[in-house]
Image (tube, rainbow, N blue to C red; front, side, top):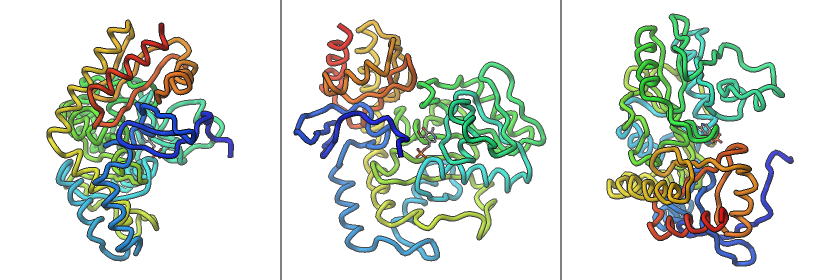
Length: 364
Ligand code: PLP
């Protein structure tokens, strides 16, 4: 179906920050499939984990335990909120789980979402994504969502089941939510028995220089959603709870046939092995600064955190297309005036300088 506006390039192979097309032209990938190839394309540790697990056991379903799935859930919990984990197949499914958990927590409760947030394309996640161009063609939406602006107090009261926030809004153009707003959401949720949900699907998994963005923003959520970079290229999502809400969803409340399959979980465990390395996380702060400084030196207005960056450009879609076809640099436009950069966490200083040089050549 014509749901994607595809570029006229066919990629056949990738290694680290590099991609090759079907004519063997080499590209520098500063998008990583929108923050998915988190540790670079075909990282040997991830490839080996997938190969090994694919030859051992691919699927048994969720009526049984598998070691990769249990290990992954344990690690995700230990490294974040300390409760339980629902594994699924994508970001939007992780959000669906959070929505259902919130409704189970407070039956009939409202869900407060922030303008500019993006949470996915299934009907629940779409209803949480207050963007008229995305929502309007598919009305009626799921009822019970209230939209808050980032400037005024959040409309949270005793009828609120959850507040869902993307701490750094990615799809709408890399807009960090002010820490004061996150703190006031925490207070309002505590005062009203509502759950604070952080969608870390794009800003998590080390993208900002800490494993989760909230770890440097000073506010701890009750639930968080993760996906994208978690699988390093394999489809996976996770909804993670704090201990107090670990058993809100009960047997039979939710499920998915493929979710948490052993091959995908083996891949995610391997990605975590790389991303958890403090040296990798420390490097993100440095490479992120280098990239931002390089772009600013070109006279560009840059925003974002770590390796989740964007700059303003007139006619961003055409700049991105020229970057791909003329400079063989993979970037993305999140709107008419914003170019987004999401290179792998393993990007080198030389690759950053090279990407900045290519962007400079385009702007010259
Ligand atoms: N939430 C955020 C913050 C996202 O950036 C995305 C995807 O871009 C999603 C949810 C939906 O994830 P998926 O496309 O895996 O369903």
